[in-house]
Length: 517
Image (tube, rainbow, N blue to C red; front, side, top):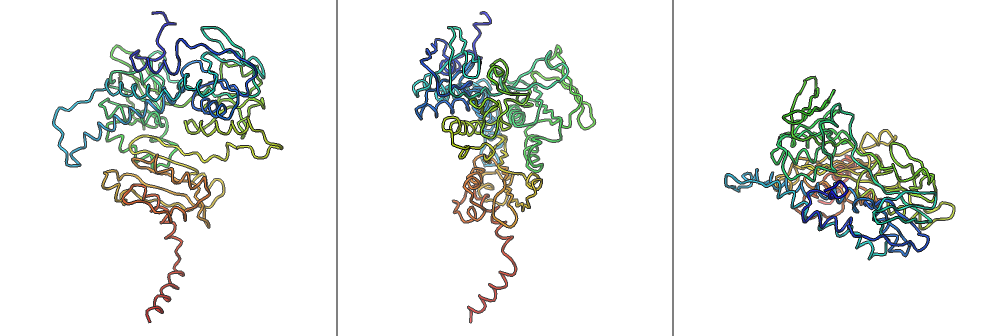
């Protein structure tokens, strides 16, 4: 098999064949352009897909160009496969602690890592129908499978194995995403390594694995591999894990990861890699102690590099740098007719961020407003996020430190899950809800939740902040009992209790005494 004939996704099984048939069909024939497009989108990840399909649903003439796999990172090498693996790892972890719930599992019960990965591939293929070339064509989008490159300020060239096309446009959107970054670790290239773009091709569990980077990707997969039985060494240059989160929030996750068997080597210095006969050797200094370990695989999770090369941005007059395409608050580039969204231009490398930014492109590119009034503004977004470890860590809005740096007086309240009945009954009482409220008001500035289902629980705060509803609204909302979501009401009730003054209580005591006469 020649290099050209290599499968786009490995292993080349029935599930990946179904995936590729949906998101990069081999027999696809690109349409012939029939005039100027209202908008041409380069990149069919989340930002590109949403931009294209919403524009087409509104009646615009739309072209969507993708050189690799439609669905982008989220479907193929990010959110979808990782959550499939994480769920299986959690099922195995739950089985191991079944005795805590009075369940007696027979000795010798085993897991099948190959079956875990096959399940993931099967579900990914099923979900891929939503991002398929066929579906988007039916929805009115002209789908071009091939490499897109700007020829000028209003033209794009599409090159594919079947030929080339030249598209003209009134507006364009750069949604080319980002790829895994590689740290300048000595010997890493020679030793070989995995990233999120290759790790989901595994069919056998690495018995020993070194994970470089204790951010969301590194932590999620380090915990999952450890739960399946890998000896995991998690190497982080900074102290602890998840350095962007509140320290006590990250510490709860770190403690669980250590119980799961992860060996954390933080404050790592002088990291080196070397290929050996026995595997891949990693040496690192952690807290003054030298570690020398040999692993079967190295997984790198140290950030994302925007895809700005080889798409002709210079010819289109679009400015960019190492951080990606430069955009203003309206997501316009230096060429006012070209916009950008998603990982290629945003500091928020999330699928839901790309979705929200795509909506902004639609409003600003297709519905221009006189004098600049009414434009959608990316800076107005309240961006929540979640790291899907166990427990999860979710956040929206400001951290306390951020609020203070902006000169805002803030009151912070924290309520522990160990005082929430449902969390106790579920055996998921490690964690808390924390809310930051602007002093003198009930305005919610931000919230952090550490819980088994933090990604679901944070949404109540996100909706409240978007709607301009404050702590009083959440405190006055009935929450069904028993649910873990009660923690949201309980934490804002701490604020309400704190503002029930002694003076008010003194007046009420006198009132009630008078009423007893």
